[in-house]
Picture 1: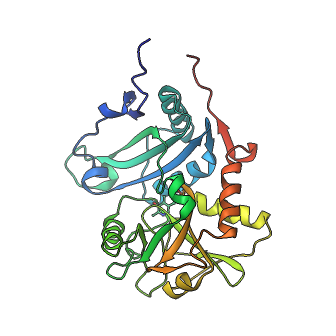
Picture 2: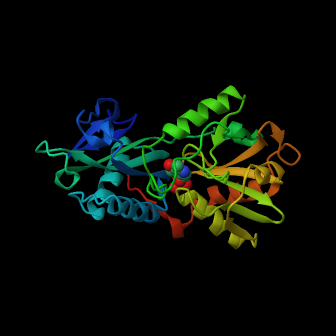
Length: 303
Ligand SMILES: *Cc1c(COP(=O)(O)O)cnc(C)c1O
């Protein structure tokens, strides 16, 4: 039997579906040349989209804030996401959707005159840290040489491609023997890391930065699950000192879920093992991927 050409992933570009390795965008697309773009990433786990509605709502808010006006409706986009997953036949997938300012049709450089473009693709599920690594926890540092791009320059609540600060911070983490990084803002408040939010369990409550961050759907899921478990939660501001003092630390992302952190700035968190609250939330997070309230099943073709 012929192998499925979409098995490694499937992309949608300009009305057509492509095997992921053959997917190409125009080089003059300002999503590429100017990072003039917003995007979202939703997971498919065991054949079901997780919190798809929430991801689509955030995505739509994003392009509205950027004053873009894609030619497809949310309903059509949703259908394309399902089709990318169906064609790939992936049961566990990382599904990205993008709206870019697109192409300057008349050389005007007037952003109002561009034709905005929609892209989407499904590839195998992506882990910021693999499950084996999550069992022992990761090493995290707070960047000393890079701050997060100020929120009044690039709005962090619109998921974006301005990753210069996050990538620079990642190299600092490697230079200091760590796995990844979180960036402070100009006042020293912790913000977030490359594609994830951060939580501490500190003084009997779960805390995460209130502002200056992308409001992660995983972050929201952690807050929802914690409330169900009767764990007090607080959205606030805190600095590196709280990360270092906290009993437990974890990060959250669609790409890997709830990921325990066992050192901060090369100091042990708690007893140096993934914490109990973290373990409970992490367990509930994966269980939730099978709960009707948050999942949208894909109907795959028969093979
Ligand atoms: C995507 C992302 C997150 C995590 O958001 P989720 O919806 O939980 O995947 C956090 N911070 C940044 C900068 C991101 O791009």
